Length: 303
Image (cartoon, rainbow, N blue to C red; front, top):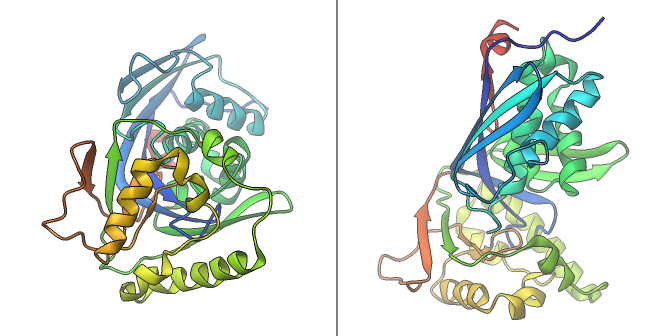
């Protein structure tokens, strides 16, 4: 028996995310209150994507768009694709800045597909949705907080990605510093060495454990907890402006890190009012998103 597809549109709001958070390389992530709004409906044939905001005029308008690719991968998990799709994306998450724009697209696509299928949220539960998203992204550190919200610890085992969600302390106050220039994960990863000294690995293990405590229970420890020796130093030469801003913020006691692969900088504690990052940076004070990517639509609400 075939699937029953929704006759009305479904929608999802996907949060921006910041991964690594200093020492938690490829494992820790935080959902932020900056969002893309996506909607989709089943059509008789073909595939169209309309993009406004970030990426408009650059991103594809057909089935090669990342949101659609994630939708089709999810429909394949159900065992059937709809005859056609019309997708609308209102993007606010900057592209290629280290704020999880690709993860937001992937998670959004997975959620839209689940919402367009009768009983889709139970037939593919959140754990399975995370595995699909992690497989498409290649690592789960951004897709986990995007899907689940809050502060997440993600890892891969057996069938794929897994994650736990923790609630950050109420006085964690993220600020992001976003440059005009873009950065790309592939270039940032290429800067990393194949091995690191045992002492550095040990250092980061301790700081990552401390960061979990600091983010959830004692933000006064965030400055020490966000120290890193695994990736930020190796990437500094390719992102000198980012490295300089992180150092400047940390020199005045702000728990600042590279957001994901950069070039955005994330501050997790209050930035002094008289701190001026320079004209090349746009600062945004954000909250921590606690809900994740929730899908809405008539079939979802009736389920």
